[in-house]
View (cartoon, rainbow, N blue to C red):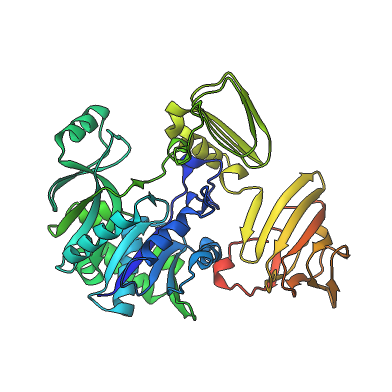
Length: 477
């Protein structure tokens, strides 16, 4: 029987700010071994038996970044399909779209294994055994959820009361007293947010329990475009009709109401990596209980999590703190309050501050750019363009640009002229000139761009040709 791991790649990860941002959510955070949470989720599913395809549901703005991430670890060539959302509509809509695609591509009996892209599972063997048990239940028409055997009275998780594989009830996030009682009873499991069911069984239950969601998603897909490539398909959901889809979680819309639900209790080393404490605890502490990543000098410091990507961090006389230093933002928090980091993220977003949305290094389909310095009338960027990649043919009304190639070989269109630039060569592009840079070599092109002008906003751009198509309509250079 075909198994289709279905990865839900959404959510801002606001509790992991400042590393997690709106345009760089926690799914892309890399762990100590160099792999991102998204890559680990992909491998978790792809390594299982009978996998016909891995389907990823993500925001369309993240498509090229997600595709690159998965290509780096998909060494066995498992087909990779995508559903691209114009914006989030919660998990019921995402899973309904996935189920409709799986049924169309793989038939009614194909089993979906729904996984979150930002969770971590430490025991792959135990996970595979749990999936095998869940698949057997799902083959009988059950909607199976995975219940994690609790190790502590967590108040940040939902719970499932169960007897064996039978679900008695779902419980929302409890108070500490109730969580202690749940732990003592032995009848309650953490609700992991992972599921296994056949596409047909899920769609039948949605037709009964939330037909408005199912019908709206079906209408949206009928208005959406599908592209097929060598590695898999890509369904880009139509924005206008997707906005009409009700926003509900799959738990509320289906799982809590269905009489076809079953649970597989499991102990698989699961974590939702929901705070800096949880992420920091993945590393081994030193003799003083400190977990350090990056360059740090500590004196009389205990039980701290410290991460620095570029600068030296010095601490004196500290205990039980989280210190996260990035090039454009610094977080200092008491470990007892790390769940409240989301309030900083929310306030930054409300104020329109760039630090909630972007890092100083911004990823684009063609590579990256890093803002090195800016001030009145100027901005300096470091730009990297991948081999065979190209910026769009574009023009700026208010700024001119000086380009200096540091390494690699680039073909530059500048008005009516084309020139090939190598290391230590440069060109000047006047405001109002059409221009483009193409990497025509086998190495990454590294370039320093100096912008000058009265307005340097990223929205001062007119595109004439864009090889990356519709999914880049909202992205700037």
